[in-house]
Image (cartoon, rainbow, N blue to C red; front, side, top):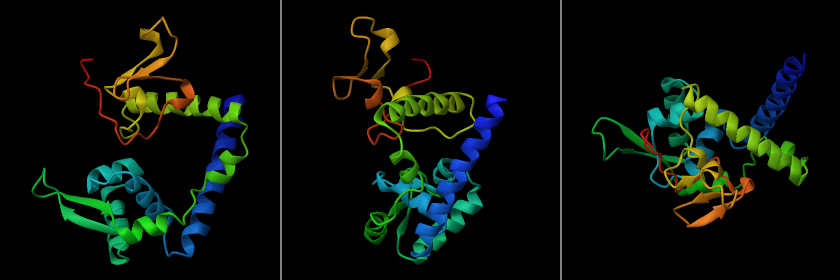
Length: 192
């Protein structure tokens, strides 16, 4: 029963956030998918391959291609040949896209703003662990999160401090410091 209620509640929150994305994007002529694409590209100056953008958006390649075409026609993204792959294209945010993005709040902002700091920290931890499980099972595209980064040392491997550790910044990390989307992320090798 509790799981059914949780499913219902999460679907209501997701619907509310998506509705907010529609309303916010409408003034700029954007669909929620186009807004999501801009947000994903915001902290990726190197851009993303179209197939990777589709995976991150959890949409088909054709849907991502349509979104990118619409964004390119509005001069919000730039398409360039991928230097690592001759036939692939890399999509990045244009200056106009970056300026517009600063005016587009995320649909979940209002929802998250209602949480106390403690509840936000608890929910952050739950979301991070859930995404990690979905990623390990191949049901979500790889995320740039601490838990999958080569620089991350879990608190389970450092009994002395009881805190996580980042070898890149050479500092301990509290649970609330862990990132779901880190620009410095480097995927840990599968043999590690």
